[in-house]
Image 1 (cartoon, helix red, strand yellow):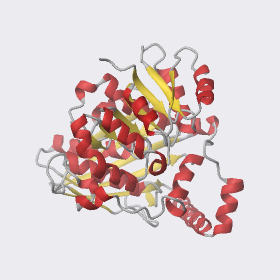
Image 2 (spheres, one colour):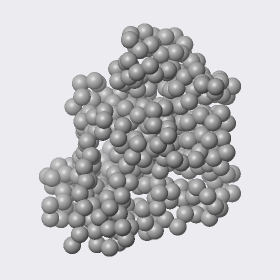
Image 3 (cartoon, helix red, strand yellow):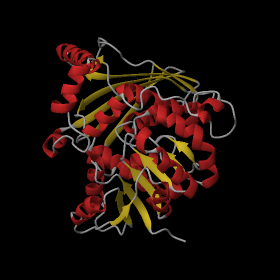
Image 4 (cartoon, helix red, strand yellow):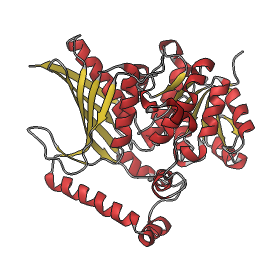
Amino acid sequence: MAREYQLVIYGATGFTGGLATKYVTKQYMNSGLRWAIAGRSKEKLAKLAEQCTDNVPGIIVADSGDSPSLHKMASSTEVIVTTAGPFARYGSALVAACVKTGTDYCDITGEIDWVRGMIAEHDDAAKSSGSHIVHLCGHDSVPWDLMTLMLAKKLKEGDPEEELKRIDMYDDIRSAPSGGTLETAFGIMFGAEKGLKKSAASTALGFDPLVKPIEGTQPSPNAVSVRNVNMLQMGKGADPHRTMFVMAGVNGNTVKRSNALNGYGPKVTYCEGQAFKSLWKAIMNQLGFVAFGVSLVIPPIRWFLRKFVLPKPGEGPSEEFMSTGYLTVTGVAKGTKGGEARGKMHFNVDPGYKDTARMVVEAGLSFVYNRDQITRPGGVYTPASCQGEVLLKRLTSTGTTFDSTFSKK
Protein backbone atom coordinates (compact mmCIF):
# COMPACT_ATOMS: atom_id res chain seq x y z
CA MET A 1 0.00 0.00 0.00
CA ALA A 2 1.32 3.43 -0.95
CA ARG A 3 2.17 5.67 1.96
CA GLU A 4 0.41 8.98 2.41
CA TYR A 5 3.47 11.03 1.54
CA GLN A 6 6.48 10.56 -0.69
CA LEU A 7 8.62 13.15 1.10
CA VAL A 8 8.57 14.75 4.56
CA ILE A 9 10.85 17.64 5.53
CA TYR A 10 11.48 17.42 9.29
CA GLY A 11 12.75 20.55 11.02
CA ALA A 12 10.98 22.63 8.39
CA THR A 13 10.59 25.74 10.56
CA GLY A 14 14.33 26.00 11.19
CA PHE A 15 16.64 28.07 9.00
CA THR A 16 17.76 25.37 6.56
CA GLY A 17 14.46 23.52 6.81
CA GLY A 18 12.67 26.68 5.70
CA LEU A 19 14.97 26.96 2.70
CA ALA A 20 14.29 23.31 1.83
CA THR A 21 10.55 23.96 2.03
CA LYS A 22 10.83 26.97 -0.27
CA TYR A 23 12.93 24.96 -2.70
CA VAL A 24 10.38 22.14 -2.98
CA THR A 25 7.54 24.65 -3.31
CA LYS A 26 9.18 26.37 -6.27
CA GLN A 27 11.07 23.56 -7.97
CA TYR A 28 8.32 20.94 -7.80
CA MET A 29 5.26 23.20 -8.06
CA ASN A 30 3.37 21.13 -10.66
CA SER A 31 5.01 17.75 -10.10
CA GLY A 32 2.24 16.07 -8.14
CA LEU A 33 4.69 15.32 -5.34
CA ARG A 34 2.93 14.20 -2.15
CA TRP A 35 4.85 15.97 0.57
CA ALA A 36 4.58 17.33 4.10
CA ILE A 37 6.49 19.55 6.50
CA ALA A 38 7.09 18.46 10.06
CA GLY A 39 8.28 19.85 13.38
CA ARG A 40 7.25 20.58 16.96
CA SER A 41 5.03 23.63 16.51
CA LYS A 42 1.75 23.25 14.63
CA GLU A 43 1.34 27.03 14.56
CA LYS A 44 4.75 27.64 12.99
CA LEU A 45 4.20 24.84 10.49
CA ALA A 46 0.80 26.25 9.48
CA LYS A 47 2.32 29.68 8.96
CA LEU A 48 5.06 28.19 6.79
CA ALA A 49 2.55 26.12 4.80
CA GLU A 50 0.58 29.29 4.01
CA GLN A 51 3.63 30.59 2.13
CA CYS A 52 3.59 27.54 -0.16
CA THR A 53 0.73 29.00 -2.19
CA ASP A 54 0.74 26.76 -5.27
CA ASN A 55 2.23 23.61 -3.74
CA VAL A 56 0.72 23.30 -0.26
CA PRO A 57 2.29 20.55 1.89
CA GLY A 58 0.68 18.48 4.60
CA ILE A 59 1.52 19.24 8.24
CA ILE A 60 2.90 16.70 10.72
CA VAL A 61 3.56 17.51 14.36
CA ALA A 62 6.45 15.41 15.68
CA ASP A 63 9.07 15.91 18.38
CA SER A 64 12.55 14.42 18.68
CA GLY A 65 11.78 13.62 22.32
CA ASP A 66 8.52 11.82 21.49
CA SER A 67 9.33 8.46 19.88
CA PRO A 68 5.68 7.51 19.10
CA SER A 69 5.25 10.74 17.11
CA LEU A 70 8.44 10.01 15.17
CA HIS A 71 7.32 6.45 14.45
CA LYS A 72 3.95 7.70 13.20
CA MET A 73 5.64 10.26 10.96
CA ALA A 74 8.11 7.73 9.56
CA SER A 75 5.28 5.28 8.84
CA SER A 76 3.43 7.90 6.79
CA THR A 77 6.14 8.61 4.19
CA GLU A 78 8.58 6.98 1.80
CA VAL A 79 11.42 9.37 2.61
CA ILE A 80 12.30 11.75 5.44
CA VAL A 81 14.68 14.64 4.85
CA THR A 82 15.76 16.19 8.14
CA THR A 83 17.57 19.44 8.90
CA ALA A 84 16.95 19.33 12.67
CA GLY A 85 20.32 19.37 14.42
CA PRO A 86 22.49 19.10 16.38
CA PHE A 87 21.91 15.52 15.33
CA ALA A 88 23.70 13.89 18.25
CA ARG A 89 21.18 15.75 20.41
CA TYR A 90 18.02 15.49 18.32
CA GLY A 91 18.58 12.92 15.57
CA SER A 92 19.08 9.42 16.98
CA ALA A 93 15.44 8.60 17.73
CA LEU A 94 14.38 9.60 14.21
CA VAL A 95 17.01 7.33 12.64
CA ALA A 96 15.74 4.47 14.81
CA ALA A 97 12.14 5.17 13.74
CA CYS A 98 13.09 5.17 10.05
CA VAL A 99 15.03 1.91 10.39
CA LYS A 100 12.11 0.24 12.19
CA THR A 101 9.55 1.36 9.60
CA GLY A 102 11.70 0.76 6.50
CA THR A 103 11.68 4.46 5.65
CA ASP A 104 14.49 6.07 3.68
CA TYR A 105 16.25 8.97 5.39
CA CYS A 106 18.63 11.80 4.45
CA ASP A 107 20.15 14.45 6.74
CA ILE A 108 22.62 17.34 6.66
CA THR A 109 24.72 16.37 9.66
CA GLY A 110 28.44 17.02 9.79
CA GLU A 111 28.80 15.23 13.15
CA ILE A 112 31.03 12.37 12.07
CA ASP A 113 31.28 10.65 15.47
CA TRP A 114 27.48 10.53 15.63
CA VAL A 115 27.49 8.99 12.16
CA ARG A 116 29.90 6.35 13.42
CA GLY A 117 27.43 5.49 16.17
CA MET A 118 24.51 5.27 13.74
CA ILE A 119 26.45 2.86 11.50
CA ALA A 120 27.33 0.61 14.43
CA GLU A 121 23.84 0.66 15.89
CA HIS A 122 21.64 0.50 12.80
CA ASP A 123 23.48 -0.77 9.71
CA ASP A 124 22.48 -4.41 10.14
CA ALA A 125 18.91 -3.60 11.15
CA ALA A 126 18.53 -1.23 8.17
CA LYS A 127 19.60 -4.04 5.84
CA SER A 128 16.81 -6.16 7.25
CA SER A 129 14.12 -3.45 7.02
CA GLY A 130 15.26 -2.07 3.66
CA SER A 131 15.77 1.43 5.06
CA HIS A 132 18.50 3.53 3.45
CA ILE A 133 19.96 5.86 6.08
CA VAL A 134 22.09 8.42 4.23
CA HIS A 135 23.98 10.92 6.36
CA LEU A 136 26.03 13.94 5.25
CA CYS A 137 23.71 14.99 2.40
CA GLY A 138 24.39 18.73 2.49
CA HIS A 139 27.47 20.94 2.20
CA ASP A 140 28.87 18.33 4.55
CA SER A 141 29.83 16.43 2.44
CA VAL A 142 28.11 16.01 -0.94
CA PRO A 143 30.54 18.04 -3.14
CA TRP A 144 33.69 16.27 -1.97
CA ASP A 145 32.08 12.83 -1.69
CA LEU A 146 30.72 12.96 -5.24
CA MET A 147 33.94 14.49 -6.58
CA THR A 148 35.95 11.54 -5.26
CA LEU A 149 33.42 9.07 -6.68
CA MET A 150 33.58 10.63 -10.14
CA LEU A 151 37.36 11.05 -10.29
CA ALA A 152 37.91 7.46 -9.18
CA LYS A 153 35.57 6.45 -12.00
CA LYS A 154 37.43 8.72 -14.44
CA LEU A 155 40.72 7.02 -13.58
CA LYS A 156 39.16 3.63 -14.33
CA GLU A 157 37.77 4.90 -17.64
CA GLY A 158 41.25 6.10 -18.62
CA ASP A 159 42.92 2.84 -17.57
CA PRO A 160 40.97 -0.11 -16.14
CA GLU A 161 43.99 -1.08 -14.02
CA GLU A 162 44.07 2.26 -12.21
CA GLU A 163 43.09 2.49 -8.57
CA LEU A 164 42.83 5.71 -6.63
CA LYS A 165 46.04 6.50 -4.74
CA ARG A 166 45.65 10.14 -3.70
CA ILE A 167 43.08 12.88 -4.04
CA ASP A 168 43.65 16.58 -3.38
CA MET A 169 40.80 19.06 -2.99
CA TYR A 170 41.08 22.81 -3.55
CA ASP A 171 38.10 24.73 -2.15
CA ASP A 172 37.13 28.21 -3.33
CA ILE A 173 34.16 29.27 -1.20
CA ARG A 174 32.04 32.20 -0.09
CA SER A 175 29.67 31.33 2.74
CA ALA A 176 28.84 32.22 6.35
CA PRO A 177 27.66 30.17 9.35
CA SER A 178 24.12 29.99 10.69
CA GLY A 179 23.15 29.84 14.34
CA GLY A 180 22.30 26.15 14.02
CA THR A 181 25.75 25.31 12.66
CA LEU A 182 27.41 27.26 15.46
CA GLU A 183 25.19 25.56 18.05
CA THR A 184 26.38 22.19 16.75
CA ALA A 185 30.02 23.29 16.82
CA PHE A 186 29.77 24.73 20.33
CA GLY A 187 28.05 21.57 21.52
CA ILE A 188 30.89 19.41 20.20
CA MET A 189 33.63 21.68 21.56
CA PHE A 190 32.17 22.87 24.85
CA GLY A 191 28.68 21.45 25.42
CA ALA A 192 26.67 18.28 25.86
CA GLU A 193 28.25 16.53 22.87
CA LYS A 194 31.83 17.11 24.04
CA GLY A 195 33.64 13.86 24.67
CA LEU A 196 30.64 11.63 23.99
CA LYS A 197 31.54 8.05 24.77
CA LYS A 198 31.38 5.38 22.13
CA SER A 199 28.10 3.56 22.03
CA ALA A 200 28.00 -0.05 23.15
CA ALA A 201 27.44 -1.06 19.52
CA SER A 202 30.56 0.82 18.39
CA THR A 203 32.65 -0.82 21.09
CA ALA A 204 31.29 -4.26 20.27
CA LEU A 205 32.09 -3.79 16.58
CA GLY A 206 35.79 -3.66 17.41
CA PHE A 207 36.88 -1.30 14.60
CA ASP A 208 36.02 2.07 13.13
CA PRO A 209 32.37 1.86 11.99
CA LEU A 210 33.24 4.00 8.95
CA VAL A 211 34.98 0.96 7.43
CA LYS A 212 32.17 -1.49 8.21
CA PRO A 213 31.50 -3.39 4.96
CA ILE A 214 28.13 -4.23 3.44
CA GLU A 215 28.77 -7.92 4.08
CA GLY A 216 31.03 -9.67 6.58
CA THR A 217 32.34 -8.96 10.06
CA GLN A 218 35.83 -7.67 9.24
CA PRO A 219 36.75 -4.09 8.29
CA SER A 220 36.84 -3.21 4.60
CA PRO A 221 40.28 -3.63 2.99
CA ASN A 222 39.86 -0.23 1.33
CA ALA A 223 41.36 2.41 3.63
CA VAL A 224 41.69 6.20 3.56
CA SER A 225 44.38 8.20 5.31
CA VAL A 226 43.15 11.76 5.90
CA ARG A 227 46.04 14.24 5.62
CA ASN A 228 44.35 17.61 5.34
CA VAL A 229 46.08 21.00 5.17
CA ASN A 230 46.47 22.35 8.72
CA MET A 231 48.63 25.40 8.10
CA LEU A 232 49.61 27.49 5.10
CA GLN A 233 50.67 25.31 2.17
CA MET A 234 52.39 27.10 -0.68
CA GLY A 235 51.11 26.30 -4.16
CA LYS A 236 53.31 24.45 -6.63
CA GLY A 237 53.24 25.30 -10.30
CA ALA A 238 49.71 26.25 -11.36
CA ASP A 239 48.17 24.97 -8.13
CA PRO A 240 46.92 27.65 -5.70
CA HIS A 241 48.01 28.11 -2.11
CA ARG A 242 45.96 26.26 0.51
CA THR A 243 45.05 26.80 4.14
CA MET A 244 42.97 24.89 6.63
CA PHE A 245 39.31 24.36 5.70
CA VAL A 246 37.05 23.94 8.70
CA MET A 247 35.01 21.02 7.34
CA ALA A 248 37.85 19.12 5.68
CA GLY A 249 38.03 16.55 8.47
CA VAL A 250 34.38 15.66 8.07
CA ASN A 251 34.74 15.47 4.28
CA GLY A 252 37.78 13.21 4.53
CA ASN A 253 35.99 10.83 6.87
CA THR A 254 32.96 10.79 4.58
CA VAL A 255 35.23 9.68 1.75
CA LYS A 256 36.67 7.08 4.12
CA ARG A 257 33.19 5.56 4.50
CA SER A 258 32.51 5.76 0.77
CA ASN A 259 35.82 4.10 -0.13
CA ALA A 260 35.12 1.28 2.31
CA LEU A 261 31.91 0.52 0.38
CA ASN A 262 32.78 1.62 -3.18
CA GLY A 263 36.39 0.39 -3.29
CA TYR A 264 38.26 3.26 -4.96
CA GLY A 265 41.58 1.87 -3.77
CA PRO A 266 43.20 -0.06 -0.89
CA LYS A 267 45.38 2.82 0.31
CA VAL A 268 43.98 6.26 -0.49
CA THR A 269 45.36 9.56 0.81
CA TYR A 270 42.86 12.41 1.12
CA CYS A 271 44.11 16.01 1.39
CA GLU A 272 41.86 19.09 1.37
CA GLY A 273 42.35 22.79 1.93
CA GLN A 274 40.83 26.16 1.13
CA ALA A 275 42.39 27.58 -2.04
CA PHE A 276 43.77 31.07 -2.69
CA LYS A 277 45.58 32.48 -5.70
CA SER A 278 46.84 35.34 -3.53
CA LEU A 279 49.43 34.44 -0.91
CA TRP A 280 48.39 37.47 1.14
CA LYS A 281 44.76 36.34 1.27
CA ALA A 282 45.86 32.83 2.23
CA ILE A 283 47.94 34.20 5.13
CA MET A 284 45.10 36.43 6.35
CA ASN A 285 42.62 33.56 6.17
CA GLN A 286 44.88 31.32 8.23
CA LEU A 287 45.48 34.04 10.82
CA GLY A 288 41.72 34.66 11.00
CA PHE A 289 41.10 30.99 11.82
CA VAL A 290 43.74 31.08 14.54
CA ALA A 291 42.35 34.28 16.07
CA PHE A 292 38.77 33.00 16.07
CA GLY A 293 39.87 29.68 17.57
CA VAL A 294 41.76 31.42 20.37
CA SER A 295 38.77 33.66 21.13
CA LEU A 296 36.50 30.63 21.51
CA VAL A 297 38.63 28.93 24.15
CA ILE A 298 38.52 32.01 26.39
CA PRO A 299 35.15 31.73 28.20
CA PRO A 300 34.35 35.47 28.61
CA ILE A 301 35.09 36.19 24.94
CA ARG A 302 33.14 33.12 23.85
CA TRP A 303 30.15 34.24 25.96
CA PHE A 304 30.30 37.75 24.47
CA LEU A 305 30.47 36.44 20.90
CA ARG A 306 27.53 34.08 21.40
CA LYS A 307 25.46 36.70 23.20
CA PHE A 308 26.02 39.73 21.00
CA VAL A 309 27.84 38.86 17.76
CA LEU A 310 27.15 35.40 16.37
CA PRO A 311 23.78 34.29 14.93
CA LYS A 312 21.40 32.35 17.19
CA PRO A 313 19.75 29.00 16.29
CA GLY A 314 17.15 29.67 13.62
CA GLU A 315 19.11 32.63 12.26
CA GLY A 316 21.42 32.63 9.28
CA PRO A 317 22.84 34.60 6.37
CA SER A 318 20.55 37.03 4.57
CA GLU A 319 18.95 36.14 1.24
CA GLU A 320 21.10 38.81 -0.37
CA PHE A 321 24.31 37.34 1.03
CA MET A 322 23.33 33.79 0.09
CA SER A 323 22.68 34.85 -3.50
CA THR A 324 26.30 36.02 -3.74
CA GLY A 325 27.73 32.88 -2.17
CA TYR A 326 29.34 30.05 -4.13
CA LEU A 327 31.51 26.97 -3.90
CA THR A 328 33.98 25.70 -6.48
CA VAL A 329 35.76 22.46 -5.65
CA THR A 330 38.70 21.41 -7.80
CA GLY A 331 39.76 17.81 -7.35
CA VAL A 332 43.01 16.22 -8.48
CA ALA A 333 43.10 12.42 -8.29
CA LYS A 334 46.22 10.37 -8.89
CA GLY A 335 46.12 6.69 -9.70
CA THR A 336 48.39 3.77 -8.91
CA LYS A 337 49.43 3.45 -12.58
CA GLY A 338 50.39 7.06 -13.17
CA GLY A 339 47.06 8.39 -14.36
CA GLU A 340 45.62 11.71 -13.23
CA ALA A 341 42.00 12.83 -13.23
CA ARG A 342 40.96 16.42 -12.63
CA GLY A 343 37.48 17.68 -11.92
CA LYS A 344 35.68 20.90 -11.12
CA MET A 345 32.31 21.15 -9.37
CA HIS A 346 30.56 24.51 -8.97
CA PHE A 347 27.61 25.64 -6.85
CA ASN A 348 26.50 29.17 -7.76
CA VAL A 349 24.78 30.21 -4.52
CA ASP A 350 25.62 29.86 -0.83
CA PRO A 351 26.56 26.18 -0.37
CA GLY A 352 26.18 26.05 3.40
CA TYR A 353 22.44 26.73 3.50
CA LYS A 354 20.65 27.61 0.27
CA ASP A 355 22.35 24.89 -1.76
CA THR A 356 22.49 22.55 1.22
CA ALA A 357 18.69 22.70 1.16
CA ARG A 358 18.74 21.77 -2.54
CA MET A 359 21.30 19.00 -1.98
CA VAL A 360 19.40 17.25 0.78
CA VAL A 361 16.03 17.57 -0.99
CA GLU A 362 17.48 16.11 -4.20
CA ALA A 363 19.16 13.36 -2.16
CA GLY A 364 15.75 12.46 -0.74
CA LEU A 365 13.96 12.73 -4.08
CA SER A 366 16.46 10.28 -5.56
CA PHE A 367 14.49 7.62 -3.70
CA VAL A 368 11.16 9.01 -4.89
CA TYR A 369 11.92 9.43 -8.60
CA ASN A 370 14.97 7.21 -9.22
CA ARG A 371 14.55 4.31 -6.82
CA ASP A 372 15.00 1.74 -9.59
CA GLN A 373 18.51 3.15 -10.23
CA ILE A 374 19.65 2.80 -6.61
CA THR A 375 20.99 -0.72 -6.24
CA ARG A 376 22.22 -0.73 -2.66
CA PRO A 377 20.33 -2.79 -0.08
CA GLY A 378 19.21 -1.10 3.11
CA GLY A 379 22.00 0.16 5.36
CA VAL A 380 23.76 3.26 6.66
CA TYR A 381 25.48 5.14 3.87
CA THR A 382 27.08 8.27 2.49
CA PRO A 383 25.71 10.00 -0.64
CA ALA A 384 28.44 8.59 -2.91
CA SER A 385 27.97 5.04 -1.63
CA CYS A 386 24.18 5.07 -2.02
CA GLN A 387 22.63 7.55 -4.50
CA GLY A 388 25.96 8.22 -6.21
CA GLU A 389 25.64 9.37 -9.82
CA VAL A 390 21.86 9.48 -9.50
CA LEU A 391 22.26 12.37 -7.08
CA LEU A 392 24.91 14.08 -9.20
CA LYS A 393 22.56 14.03 -12.21
CA ARG A 394 19.77 15.53 -10.13
CA LEU A 395 22.12 18.27 -8.93
CA THR A 396 23.51 19.09 -12.37
CA SER A 397 19.95 19.35 -13.70
CA THR A 398 19.07 21.91 -10.99
CA GLY A 399 22.09 24.23 -10.94
CA THR A 400 25.38 22.47 -10.20
CA THR A 401 28.05 22.14 -12.89
CA PHE A 402 30.66 19.39 -13.11
CA ASP A 403 33.35 18.38 -15.59
CA SER A 404 36.42 16.15 -15.49
CA THR A 405 39.42 15.12 -17.58
CA PHE A 406 41.97 12.27 -17.59
CA SER A 407 45.63 12.34 -18.53
CA LYS A 408 48.58 9.97 -18.26
CA LYS A 409 52.26 10.62 -18.59
